[in-house]
Image (cartoon, rainbow, N blue to C red; front, side, top):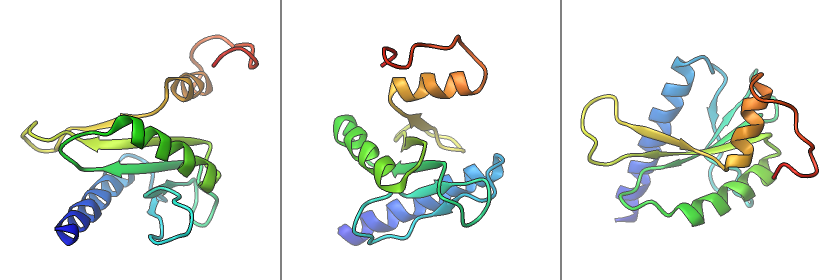
Length: 129
């Protein structure tokens, strides 16, 4: 059973990687498995060989475990040194192609991302979380 789950997870990582590359992130790459500190599943960088600006955690399971995953994501972001971290979750039973995938991150990180993209007003960095 573990091998089937690993194959399913590896396949989902390859599919998410293909989506990222097809949507303007040609230097996205899978991380090396088996590292002492979990650094996530995919790094998104501006060019090959740079430290990741974004780390992605990929999930393909029936029942989401949001609390556990968000805690893992915080650790992966810290271990990788990435500025941004999000997780993807493939929605089961949604049918059709391509499958529906959610991108999930903490709200405070999302608002930081929106401001970096030019939306919103500057905030007092001591009080915005």
